[in-house]
Image (cartoon, rainbow, N blue to C red; front, side, top):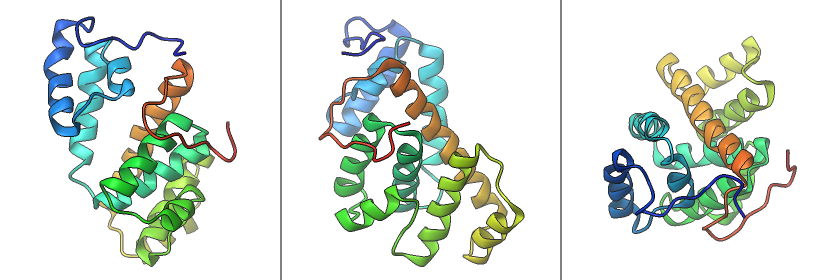
Length: 181
């Protein structure tokens, strides 16, 4: 059971209701993560703004691959469950590829550089080496895209940490971190 209230649609603050309505329209339901964040309309607005902006970066497969790598590093079963589901059903990533992504890798050469770099950022809390930057650039990523990878790591770290603090009830098919943090 979640340690922080997962609010119902009727219980969320009025300021959060339009955002949750949009999420329900897009996904067909409102995941527990969003109902958790909705207890703070300011946090919900900030998160969905970041999420909306970053949805225009890279491609959906790379974004989901990064989310899986970061969730594995941070040991977040909720996010692993959500992004495994989204990876399979939205991004159309194969189960074998998802397994690689969780290890900070990809069978796709360019995606491998982004996912590996994202995992290093999460593991080292941003303290990456010059060679890490050089490797992601050599794979074809621009400085702007490197900033976007860092932003995606930050976005996913927020949800990983919040879900671990709250112990959010998983409302996706369950997946577990190999190295729970």
